[in-house]
Length: 215
Image (cartoon, rainbow, N blue to C red):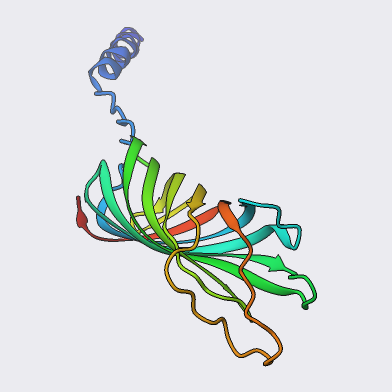
């Protein structure tokens, strides 16, 4: 019995010693993923729109909708050059005429500054020069100049895809230069002056596809 008891005692003493010698495998925390910023971004947005006129325009609805396309050249993570084409539509009922849709189309070039960047989010401010043009059936289509500002927040959902939202305000100057006819009208009808829209506010979602090497 003595040898058996001695053997059990040796085994019991050996167990904790063996446990102490076994290495503890630590599982390192997963490093947060950082999405690369790339040279080229193509962005599309849809929005609800609100218009303000420089003079009373009771014949124009204050609420409408808008859409736009933008190309963003981003050689630096903190700054980008933006080219865009945007259009906002509003219901227009000129006096004595049937109701129709009027629109303001803006060609734009500007710069975008990224105010805050995290591994997934981009928060930015954009300023741009505009070339707006009015349009509607049976109306003159004069051109103008203007200024645009926008704030946006984008979130990476994939290396090459961002979803976000933008708030945009366009300030439109008065018509300048010769106007062009807005389409065929009856001989007894003179082309109409477009509604005096001077400011357009847009709020809506954006979808951005990202291309190219990392900037």
